[in-house]
Length: 377
Image (cartoon, rainbow, N blue to C red; front, side):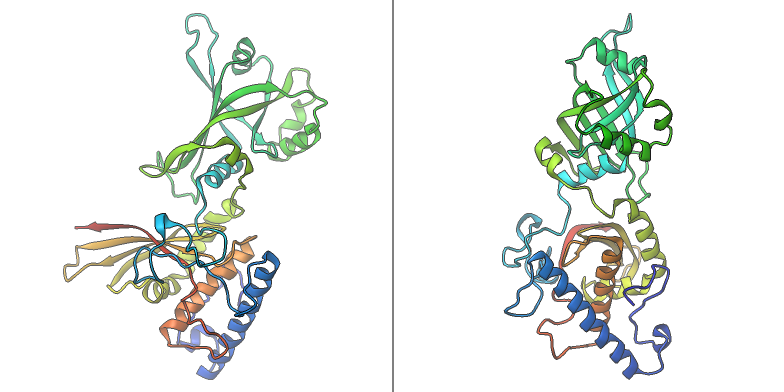
């Protein structure tokens, strides 16, 4: 089951036909094997990370929530529960989000200070391609006679800004996208630089035309050394300055380039599993009008639930939940496994399943955070 492709429907329902088995005893046998296998796999991965509590033989999970009705008490400011013992949050921090945007994007707008007669000092924007070096610094391959290159050469100590934006899961439009502005000084990279071979290879793989021009004397590599970084998460959401050192030390999200495909398959093929999750893990007690996964990353997934509030059908309540993975995933296959475990536990809880060899009830160790609510008339 865990190895099944995303297009396979894995609905943990009491309907035996959906499990393609002939009896309830077979379902129990399958779930028992799955429960044992996934617990073993998770303990093995936690052991590798040094996060498994051998004395109790159970997962040390983050338990966070927005209200007591969802997996325990609210953690201060959305932080991980101090008693959980996992050592990580269930949401990417702003440094990781900024690094993800600059890593996934491979082009942007470079704003230099114009040296042209009559508009000296005016902002001049140019579309440019780039790659990142190992520290997350943008590296550009530029023609020495391009206008933006000449602007830089005329004021070598001047500041420039590289603006780049990423639509994330593909639904972002207009201002509703994540974006990053990297401001700093641009310096030419000498051809004998220590990382030149790596940069050439990286640029060639990312931009196919590079092989045709990178050896030309008219083209050179330049490195933008950040002094200020500004991140915006989308329209009306998180926006703040990012510490440069923290940005350079952060890792981009490993699922970033696959998140759109994961979201599409979850929302298309797992509607029933999502409803079970909302009912039994998120404790949504009113009639559910719609439910969608809006984001997936290495630490978890965001789920938006719209439900009817009260007797009036035109009064809707929209809640945003964060369902964390109990361990950070290292691949798309890991993410599939963690998501299917959540669906499995929602089915188990809904059907009153209790496993004799486990002192944690289904759903209790799934980290959940209520991140927003909107009451619409």
